[in-house]
Structures are given as structure tokens and as C-alpha cells.
Image (cartoon, rainbow, N blue to C red; front, side, top):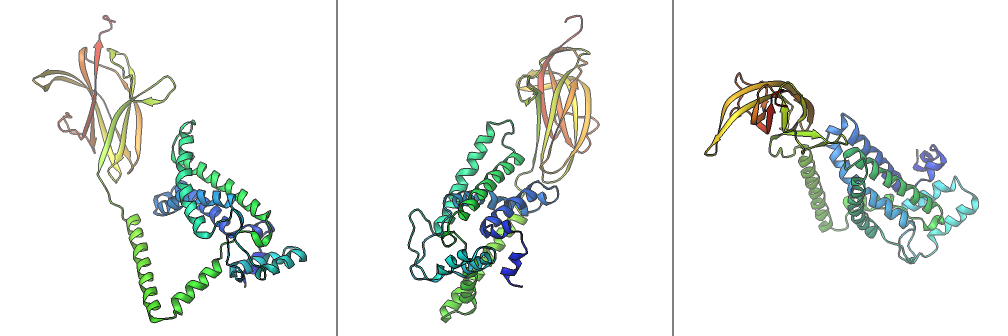
Length: 368
């Protein structure tokens, strides 16, 4: 079944939609699935599609909207195979007059048009504009309630790209058929096949082999880097946060004054960068300490609470701990000890995996 017959099976709007812009739409949709879908997002496909999506797609769609016309072609040359295929398929759909106009495409010269760009310029500008557009969208998101997060970024870049793609398709349709930009896929494939399998000289054959081997090595290297990334440093984040007046969690304005029997909330947070799922345990203690000659001695400690949480690799968890002191005094140390796995029988800052603390004052009810 020929390509023209296959195109007839599609609805008319899809038949007339440019193939390169359709590829951009498919890229946007595939990137959304690979980035946001629960299972697919854990595969290397997310990285591969994400790079093309962020560094090429928005710029290409924007350039296509700005320059819908075909680039320059040497006078007297015949139309490419891709142009012939596009024209013959559209002829089945349009009037006889339009078909007659297209038939002159191979007979008329096509000098450089004012404002048109060739394929190399189009590709180069696509990368350059994408590198400018993507950070600009991120900057605008920073001033919105959504912030710079994965879902808003994917949706914003995807929405911009789809909008530019629709504008590009409409602008191309508004041009005469012989002036619309088309990617000459068939011509490229035919030229590549002729160069690889029917070289003119032995030197060309050797160069073709070297080119193919180089491409295979490059693709293999990139694939290995994506599939087997360096693990990097392994560590765990351990921090305390408070809730401000707007309900956001901040590392500021920690409670300093407590009353025995009274409670004040603190948010305990853990970030897992150990490259594997970890079962964490946290022990909260209130310690009376003395400091002499830069040496800290724990004279008395009271365990306030302990809790555990399993966190997947590259994940994080926050939970609220209501601090209820059982000691009184000034400059007491409210200490949180983090352990991988179960804590020991006698948890201390010396045997903890991570430790964080606050200095607090605790008064009795009569003093308050």
C-alpha cells in the first residue's frame, strides 16, 4: 500500500497537517507520558525525550510559525521526492485547479525569497531559540503560584510548543502549495541509501564505513551514559522546618520558648539521595548539656518521641512532630537523631547517622 493511499485513510485535517509539525506534536505528547507517567518516568526514555523536548521542540515550532515558506532552491532543479509525494496526496483532496498549479512546481525556477531560511539555518535557530525560550518560561513560572516544578514546566513548554505548532500549520496552509516549507524526507533517505550502498569510489565506501562506525559508537556511548549513569555521592538530607503565616514550610522562626506539658509543632524532613530505598528512624531527645573548652557534655537526656519512615531513592518526606518537653531549664538542646534502619538501645549524637538540633528554653507552668 503506497504512502498516498495510507494518507487517504486519515481525516482530511490530519492529511493536510505537515509531517514535521505532526512529529513535534507527537514528541510533546510522548514527553508528557515519559515524564509524568508513574512507570515510564523511571526509564531512560524520560531523559532522551526530555532533552529533545526542551532543547529543540519549542524553538523549531517557533521558527516554523515565523517562517512558514520554503527555503531557497537552486534554479531549474526538480522538486524533491517529498514535495512530489505531498503534492500528489493533496491533489486527491483538492480541486483540479490547485492540482494544475502544483504541477508547475517542477517547471518553474524558485530563487531565494526575501525572509526565507534554508534547512541548516532552521535547525540552528531551533536549538538557539529553544535554549532561550525554555529558561524564559521557567523564569515566568517562578512568579506564579505554580513555581518551577516538573509538572508546570512540562505543561508550560508543551503548551507553548503546541500553540506555535498550530500557528505554523495555519500559516503554511495560507501559502500557495509550491511555497510551503516541507522536509524532504524521501530525498534524504534516497541520497543516504545511494551514498551508503552505491558509492562512486572506493574512498567513498571507506568513508561511509567510518561514518557508520562513528555514529554507532556515538549512539552507544550516549546510551551507556543514560542507562548506566554515575551514582555520584550518597547522602541523606535531614532538616527542621516551621510553618509560616501563609502555610509554607520555611527554615526560619523556630520556637524557642516552651512550657512543660505544652506542645509546639516542628516539621521534620528527610531527603533520600542514597540511590536506593532506605528505612529511616528518627529519635527526638531533650538534652541538658554543659559546654566547657569547646567540649559538649550531655548531663541529662529525655527521649520525647521516635518514629520511622521508608523513603524511596531520590524521594523525600516531611512530617509534623508536636514537641512536648519534660525537662525545664534554659539553653536545653532539642536534638533529632537520624538512623538508617533501627536505632540502637542508647541513641546518642555519637552513634547517629545524622543529627540536627535547636536550643530552647523550657519553663514550668508556675513560671509562665
